[in-house]
Amino acid sequence: MSAATPSVRQMAVSIDSGHGPLHGLLTLPDQASALVVLAHAGPSPEARDEALAVILRHARIGTLTLDLLTPSEERFDDNHHNVPQLAKRLLDGLLLIKQRMLTDELPKLPIGLCAAGDCSPVVLRVAAQRDHDIFAIVCRGGLIDLAGMMYLHLLASPLLVLVGQDDERLVASTRRALHELACPNELQLLPASADSPDSGEDFESVARETAHWFVRHLPTTVAAATAPGRA
Image (cartoon, rainbow, N blue to C red):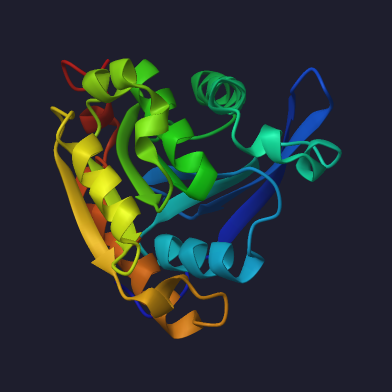
């Protein structure tokens, strides 16, 4: 990767949820080769989002940071765990992006999904439904089995799951869920400090692992993105 940060263009994205607009920020480096949607539900640690986005931009990968909850919904815990509702909203966001690609408002780019915690099962469910559009997924923590067994069986996109090594129950749950997958998948165990809000250095290593997965699995050309079997 080059040491220089590519120049970027940014644009605000708004999606009608039926309960108010959902807000996102699309950032595209020059000559972007792919786009990763960073999905979250409610406040997301901005420093972590930016650390990941910067590393992805160095790899010529654009990002769409998308909040799947409206500000008024964020106060209620149930909304954060509503996988079907959050998945529908992410699907709406992907539809908007794909429409803009078709009308040449945005470059036609292969798409990856990235999420943590409560949104991890959401991106798995969405990828299973849009397998022709999603080329790679990274989840950090979260109960991925909550995507639903049918969606785990349907998933085709290569999946990387990052889980804290000290969370034995989550590690065991993740291993059971991964046994249900037919797609390429990998579990990486993180040091406990990597999930600490104060551990910027450790999270940077997590961000680099995330970027490496997308670099490995996202096509680098439009031709690859429309190859037989994915169109």
